[in-house]
Image 1: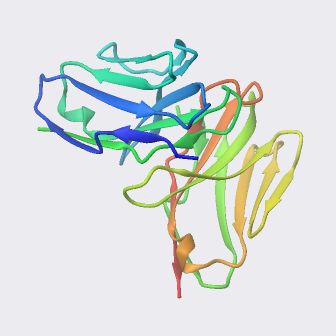
Image 2: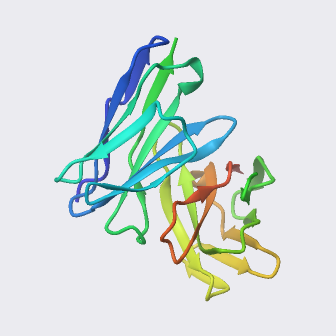
Length: 112
Length: 113
């Protein structure tokens, strides 16, 4: 069974731009969560989707948004990029909300 | 306020010896705990989990111990191997895994041959 895939793997943007990251969960998984990893803060929860509905949202500004499609694929969008948004963005999927989460390799975003 | 703390940023252990990674939590509602391992340029890999109804869970070389009264859990790796060198994250969830995972900041384990 294929694992969680994330595209693109690397991205360079400039301040003020927007970016869209994509995540394809493990086949059959309906829950997708997004995390931001930075050296100082570790992994911080962004949001979680289950069956196209956002179930939980972390403490991030409204510039961070996401959505989930009917095939469980998910996208997250960051608008008006700031230097501090440079991070590794990780997506994780699970069969249901309560099951173990499996992570993708991440998208490394660099904002210049 | 950090709800899950891994107070040791790094740990070095000789190959063949035991590695003990520690994690403390403050939220008494947490009832499900997990350990993930992360290599550079890869996403975290699930290692082992434990629910608050248990105090120990074992899977091969990996054992997790949970002390609810002390709000402390530890991951034991025996014997340690060079391939175990990675960053280890402790994570916790409440309501039987029904709330978002809260992660510690990680401990970098180096196993020296």
